[in-house]
Length: 440
Image (cartoon, rainbow, N blue to C red):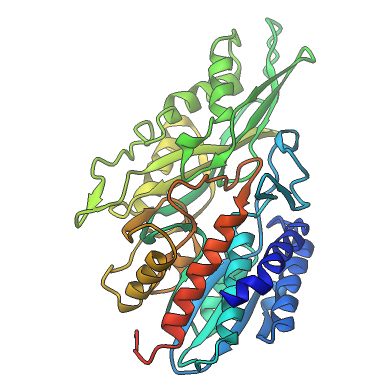
């Protein structure tokens, strides 16, 4: 392909530059800087770009027509986790053994850059557009989604599309999500004169990341620390939860009358099963209409003590047959039984897109044209912007057999896989946006 011959190194270089901006969701200055970088890059390619909602959302558009293909991406990232475990600086993109390392390489800067170049390659082809292609760039996907929630309310939406923020092949089913912060009142001091007590506990960095470390401070000046393995909370079995490891360690020690220790014992009892039996949300059915929807999973992802209470963040990913209301009711019931209360709670629905949607046929063909794999329809375990708009699916960047390092230390993408992503997205854009066929 001529475009790749001339621009392969530029694709790689653009991603490395993008990774050098530490656009962690909570850092609005850096997320806006990263958005500006992408919009400037698009403009240098001859695309129309707009910065919207006080720098929280950007759009890049090409083509013309009455239908619009949407590509939903995000420029924000989770924090680096345990920096000591990285083989390079997580916020300075680096190539090692044919892989590009850096926070966001896979989620979602790599797919964003691949998609942007795919749009440019389509522009360079002489055949005219019959439809618009609009990339919508968010800055809060790894946080509370306030960016996309507001965009949906204020702007015209694409007719159909995809978000390159999951796995291949087509993910027409996506789990729902509940994030709940619950608090348990505790004594200001557990010092009863009879022994060592727990003064403070802290663990986890984000609601959607299995915590890689947890630390306890004791009244005798000593500390206890546990180290797990960070992973995306949609697949808790891929990580090792340091909060639960701490609960196990505390249970093996004597902390008579210690309120924090009692709550840690409760956490171990209630959440040792990732499938939610301790919370009362275990789901028996793994299929819906013959399609795999998996089961509900729950993880404690952050914990901390403040004066007078212990705060615990729960992340629940629920299957299509469950509802956010059911999950929230179960969390409220736990609080009633264990002497706590829900401080805050947010939710996103599970989604199901009919596999017979005409535009999905074009995505399937593009995938098969550019890989050795046959298309299937599958479940997306994580949440993506596909939830906020109708007729959207999660599609890529993770290929079958490809290492999934999202939210982990040493996040990376093979250069060859990045280029394969570009080829797939280019094929899809060409077959949809330059087709005379209507997909509405």
